[in-house]
Length: 394
Image 1 (cartoon, rainbow, N blue to C red):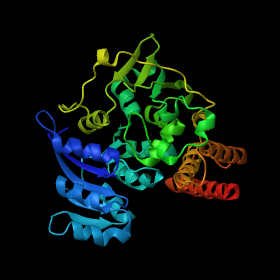
Image 2: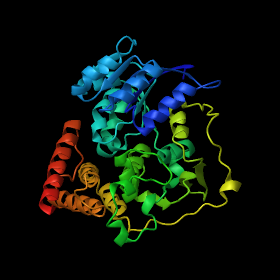
Image 3: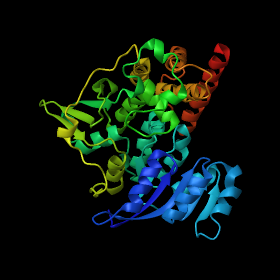
């Protein structure tokens, strides 16, 4: 990589986007010199404009076209171009850049991620839903264009850092904090509120990802993502609850060695590695790991009674075909309903499991779609069916 690195951030106002811009703005001696090309956001105009001005971005794009006027006004006379709408978001993703950070939450991030991959950029990918729904297709496109898929999720980034001799790998082990309800009774979990579900003990994340972490659906999605990213069958990917989140994931080899990546739970570490790969860059302001101070590291298996979402996700991973698309679409609808207080916390995994069973039993997702249009078609059917089930249950 050159000393000058052009960066675009898709989803700049979320936690990953904010951490990325923090790295870019504070990079010092020994780090690349970053130039911000494009920043995008869904509806948060004020934060987008502020970040674009501070980072001297070339262009800022708001996905919601109705907020274009406000964005343009905020950026007047700043030298930052304003744009809005889905087409503008895709166009921003294709502007020349050495790194495109794909951090839009949900399958909504797929079009821009796909555009960046087809353009041959190296994608620092935090948008796990795109990989879950279209992993094989994105890998095909990356092979054609020469794009690199560089994981930002701490678990996948950890594996990426210690994965060598792939023919000798026995299994991958993803660690999970267990979320805020690791030791909560099922009775109490039934009464969980969105505010409680979003109060993650270790990470500062958006609402949807926080709820996924609380149900452990996030870890199920990460299992599927890991299978696609590293070409490892889901049967050879384990999940281990590790409350301290110091070990971010492990790779087990056939000689008995287990390699792990350790660090404080701070997203700036994996983001910096993805931004500077194949090199490393210093992060002088980051808290350093002090194992003597921490004193102990705990591990335990996930509880299938308390966290059925993980087993639902594993079933989708093993079934393959279009099942991961069903899992993701049903989960996005169910989580949105929970955040709107229309369903209970435990209903999320229940509804997702029921919808997945319906589609698997119907045989319509036995094979993976061979086009992105096919991915969107399955996603549309799943969302409609999940919404219907939720209306009938109300």
